[in-house]
Image 1 (cartoon, rainbow, N blue to C red):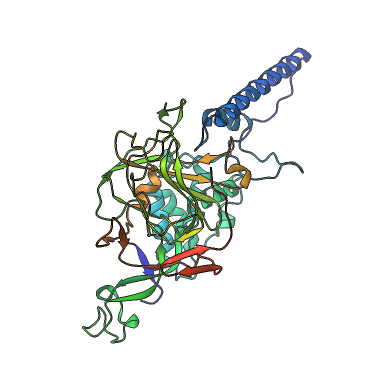
Image 2 (image 1 turned 135 degrees about the vertical axis):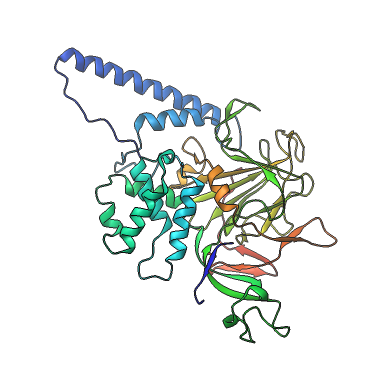
Length: 418
């Protein structure tokens, strides 16, 4: 785990050109009308498809076509609120890691570099295409910022789309790094946290201690020491029920592998889904992220204390890998290879939660980045469950929670996706 102790696009539209002849105006008008009719047809088809199946939306291809046709620039009107309609999250693991390290290394400095700001700067510079990523690009910017030569506002003042990338990348990453308290073995604790005052502790010190930290407080979806394999499969074809694109990331593993809450969230959806089988939907407290965990274990899919509205802390065991789904019959194993379907939906406006406006991102590079922090778990004797070994106290968890034993229940009611 990587921590630091406190103590120790939109695509730009082409410029309009004035036609020299009137027949060009007519031709352009016809083309615009035809284009609008085409988009309308696509949206109608997607509306029909999305109402023929539950779970994730069926018509992502139509949504993508419409989104790209109209572009990603703001088109807000008094009757149409201004919020982001589309995000292509193309940030690489290497870029995330570099920006993250700058953030942690400067967390106690006079000039603190925010990792999402740095990535948004690169996004604006590259037009969102991180195949152009070069570490020296960020190094140069960071050096200029740390030296006081410039500020982020000054550095990005001529970048038309910096604000867009900051909002888009922030929706993905803002909840993953920050302050928290972690429970650690006394052997890893600085003396300032121990009654004895001795680094690493003495026999008289408690076995574990809580320490204040700043760093990565999000976790991999797969528990520590459990093997898995994956590749970038976002957007590949799926055909069960209807043809569609895969809107998640599959992580292949063994049945029963403990599944982990990536960040502190509340349970928004839990239960059976024809496509995802036993699945969980977790919503971040800022409501911008919806984590979708699907194909969980037959007969015993979830941690026993979970229900709609439950609070989970980052790193908690929430369920178990399986192969349920692709069936209208509840509790059916119909997935050939056991795996976790891990999805991340971004929500800038509640109208995007369900339907044709859903924004699902490619999680492959994100899960690679999160693999540096995997929750350590142990078997709970006499049960089918596993539990985390070391706890976390996350300040993002709101104060309006009712705690009963180990269960924390969010008092506000939230809808499910069913």
